[in-house]
Image (cartoon, rainbow, N blue to C red; front, side, top):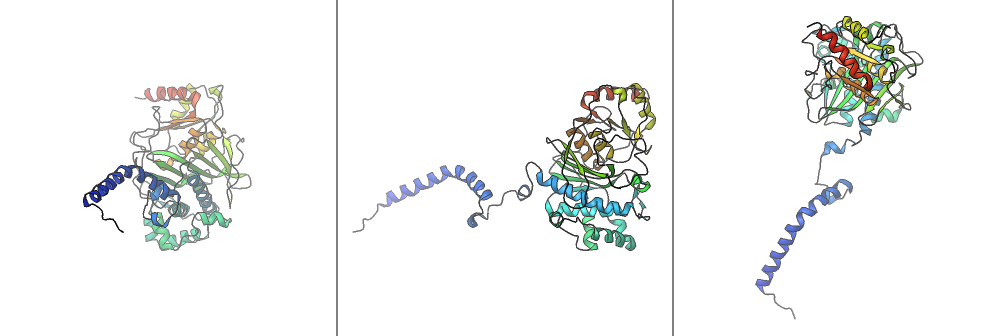
Length: 411
């Protein structure tokens, strides 16, 4: 015998069920999100949460690995160009040179970043306009790019393998057009930092940094002409007549909060890393300071006066590129001075992002001439900073005082 239900009781039951569901909903939704992130159940496939962050790692392990491999692969191309007689040199609007190596290295690095982090933005120095207009130059760069690969197949696969075509290469080069800023994940690339040094057989660097919300989190420098050994001191002639012979070529790297490392540059998988630290300075008068080779990049007369105020008698070591950052981070040098030549000159973020982090993670301090941290959150330039001063933390204040004393005397 089936008992009939009172309609009023059914209504009360339904209302009670709805009230219970409403009460449980705030608790259930977060659990569903957690479940969808960790258990690939078919009926939870509709829940898509932050696709970009799922491709990134919270401790930047993947970002560091890809950055190291990408820079190492790019240096294979730059070394090939370094040994060639015709480097395909052009002059940009600001009269600075760009070579086929700049274009090729940028294409290889952006290709690797796009394969692994397709939602990230990229700020890079070069654009493909000249290659689109010059068929011979385009073909030369393409020949370099298609033949540049790591000999380790698994490492090459991690980077996404070869670029598909010359057209794809041009489009990839032009992906470095981000305006930068203080939001999101942005990579800064200088495919050949120190192009003039590269052209004359001196020091140069392939540079890559990751900024998250304007803060540098990962930095990598590939320096093919620096000694592998961290214990080898800087010499006065290191900025000229360099070769990538046996015992030369080093990768510097850092992740925010995890220290800085160096390892030999190779042709396949990554070599083992060694921790690096800036050298303690007991007597600042014995410090070795680095500056740019080009007088147009840093005021060398002011550097001499600052050295005199600090009691430093030995001459500066002049070398191109962010290799200076790597050199002082490993203790081969001590100070890096880049002093303003013109009042209106503004530094580019790709010239400093990686090196800034590597020195700071090695125990140093990097500021402008006023003692302010370099601000990478304002776009493609360091518009709020003038000059760069890098030194061990315990002497940085004394260096800044000497810098300000010299600069104020000119006003």
